[in-house]
Length: 101
Image 1 (tube, rainbow, N blue to C red):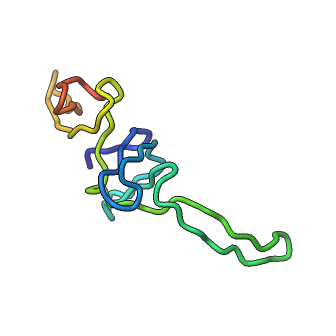
Image 2: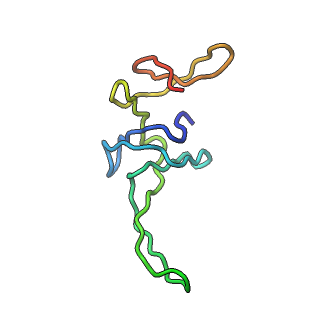
């Protein structure tokens, strides 16, 4: 996967199109990720002996094809490519050519 945890991404399709936020969790086997503040879902918490019943709002998973890396220097979404430098594989912004990490 080209997107990692703590990257800033922009949602490019769906109900949250245009929003950007930080990646909280990545699921590489399912090709999904969770973005802060996007794809909000309601979850009904059943009452237990120690906790009251409540309705929680939490982020749901988004497919990785529906998001793009958000370049803070360019202030626009960009594709991510790879380059080898000194025998190491590094991520590179396709729009500006700058190193991501």
